[in-house]
Every structure is written in structure tokens, then in C-alpha cells.
Image 1: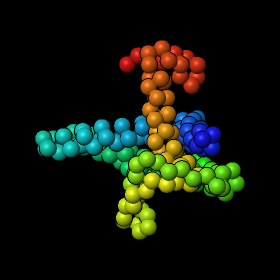
Image 2: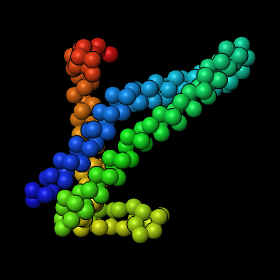
Image 3: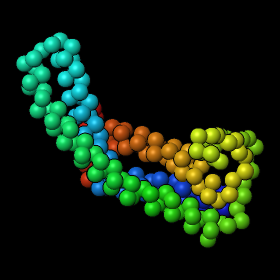
Image 4: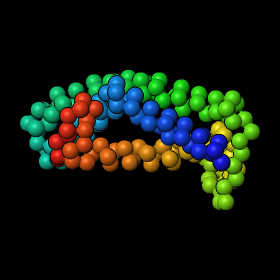
Length: 170
């Protein structure tokens, strides 16, 4: 039972470390900025297109060009994100399975769908997992829950931001 808790804690920790690194390097914030800019530019452009407002379309042409340039930056940010995520997300479960808990096995009282096994486009229902599988389940579900809770705590009025200043209420 202690193995279960340790593997889960490592998975949650990995999820939080990845989130911290993406925030620390400004990757997450910049991706959100680009997405918001692109969404607004596209919305404005299609609204002007529906209204056949040629003057507005000419004005928005520059924004659309800037949006296209930002798409290249998005690709760069995604590569940086993968450079942070992949070593942790694939290296840690390997270490756990082969070095820390090679004999770990857990059987759940219910089956869950596991996609892409044994064929790429198939789903297999399983209830028994080794350390590798339990890490991934914990990483996805418990790590995801930890991310949601972290986000809720950080968005509360008066919550501290990364630079130590209180965030403004929206």
C-alpha cells in the first residue's frame, strides 16, 4: 500500500514540476496570449467578411499577418514544452517500473478503458496495472486534479502571483 502512495505522489509531483517549469519559462502564458490574439483576430476578420466591410478587412490584414507569424512562435513554444514534458513523463515511469518498484502490481475493483492497446485504434478494458501503468493513471487523473486545484487556489482574489504581488481581481 505504501508503494501505491509513493508512486501516486511521484506522479503528482511530476505533473506539478512540469506545470511549474512551463509557467516559469513563460511558455503557458505566451501560448495563452497568442491563442487569445489569434481568436480575436479571426473573429474580427470573419465578422468583417460577413458584413463585407472592405475598409475593416484592409485594417485587419495586418493583424492576420501578425497572427500567421505568431503561429511559428507557437510551434517553437510547443517544442520547448515537449522538451520539458517528455523526459519527465516518459523517463520517470521507466525508472519507477524498472528500478524502484519492479514487482508492484495493483488490481482495481473495476476495469477502465486503456486506449491504443494492443492496436493503435483499439481500446482494451483493464483492471490490473504495474508501476508503469499506475504512474500514468496517477499522472493523468491525480495530477490533473492537482492542476485544477492549483489553478483554483491561484485565481482566488488576493492570491499571490509568482512575483509575490497580490493578483488583481478581474
